[in-house]
Length: 407
Ligand code: PLP
Image 1 (cartoon, rainbow, N blue to C red):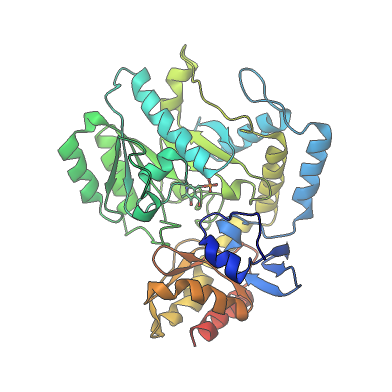
Image 2 (cartoon, rainbow, N blue to C red):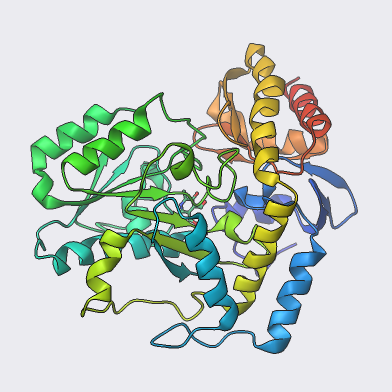
């Protein structure tokens, strides 16, 4: 049946032909389609349902907020009361003491906010020639203009002409390639380096041992802002800690977040800005940037309720449990001839890398027949990023389903 809906990241000809997978409801680690069939959710939607589906506590908090005031403005001196309280709560768990919180409507907003602020910062401190922003191969930083220009997944950049002149790419796993780029073009031209602690949409690639600390130190030594994109890893997904930046002591100049901030119940993002970067804008200068729905009061209420659940149910520890559980249950799949490797062992994320990337999309359908909702990322990797309430038994059920689908 022809539909009016144009899906994101989709071969719409195929969707028209085969129909959409219509999701009607969710509870815990499960979702149900329109026909009432239940599926184990291997991906927590798009990596975001950290507290699990069907949390009426979050819905109630949002409803109460919307009845009071849905939103107003966060421009100038305006701010909704709940948004102000949320900012203090986030600052208290920020990896860098004294961080400021700039709210956005999602991850792509957060990335473009950080990219603009990086350049504007250097302009403010008298080094306007520092404009180049460096990203990594395989990186995904959302789909706004700066994020697309920084993407290390070439197909995501193709066909638009030059999106942002001052963008450069280095190897994803090799700190030396960052150093080489700095030597080639000069630190005095480079505004910032962006890195996901774990490459997410690019296929779930864990950082090589020591890599994150190495690039942090290179940025420090060369006075390049270090921007850590924690849209996926933030709010517990890294396992045992709020952020990869805290787990690995990354001391980011800026940290971009979204997804797990509200567990996706309502769209919201936030950029954590270290005092050094914020300082010029609190001392005379001001920044002409903001989003109508940045710090939306309903989203702030969802975030507060989400953080309450994460804390009360000790879900950061559950995410750490999943780190081990995914590793134990998924690694044996690496023996299967259709599997090239399994990447796991850091955070509540993993990837089952198919030997033939062309099999990825048909495999997602075969998985559904096994009662598992999965998704392909990167070049033929099955993305695994469950909600933190997935039990070890459910992880075993997921691994068995993947094995059955492999045949
Ligand atoms: N940055 C990273 C690391 C992401 O994984 C994503 C989304 O998957 C984004 C940014 C963009 O977030 P959004 O889709 O909310 O705009």
